[in-house]
Image (cartoon, rainbow, N blue to C red; front, top):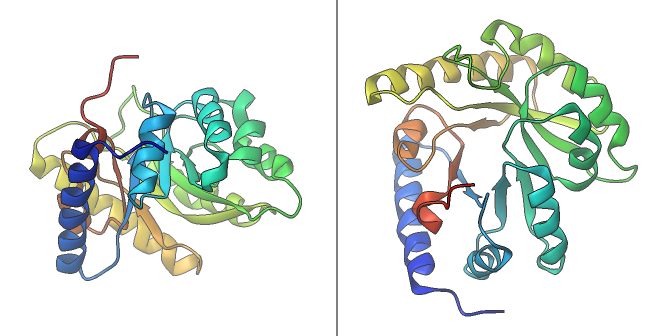
Length: 229
């Protein structure tokens, strides 16, 4: 395995310090998901050598190639990008977590294709909290029905919610995070296994943690600015 580039090692150390400090202030543990979309397998292996185990990908085929290359490392793979119907089989068979479930018609296919004997696919319902036409996610009023479908499907495990608020000033993002937390708390009151609120990225994860996030998705603060796809 290659030596970890100093900038990644230092980025990871500083980021962990900030996440851990924000988690202490919030009074709850927070997981770090390294967003590795467009990053080469070597960069992921380097960061894994420094202790990061969970990686988030946007594109199924890109992720599958990296997963195959890095299979010996035993990493945890999360799909955080939109899920197309024709990719449901691949996601069910090869990912550990899905953050972007946004419609009921995908639920049965995911459950049907999850391999027998595998641990359930850990599933988050994506919410379009700011009603953006350009974003995936179900409407807030549809969360309960979609969550109930996941909870009732063998091969899937409902874990909580994910959101990507509209790019806006911090006050508006805080409001979106607060509304997501309210949805999360209502869902957790109904489903005992719900424990994950995935929100917050490189530029706002500390605010998201303060507003209840239990998992933050960070890419550029770790790897640097992404190359345009």
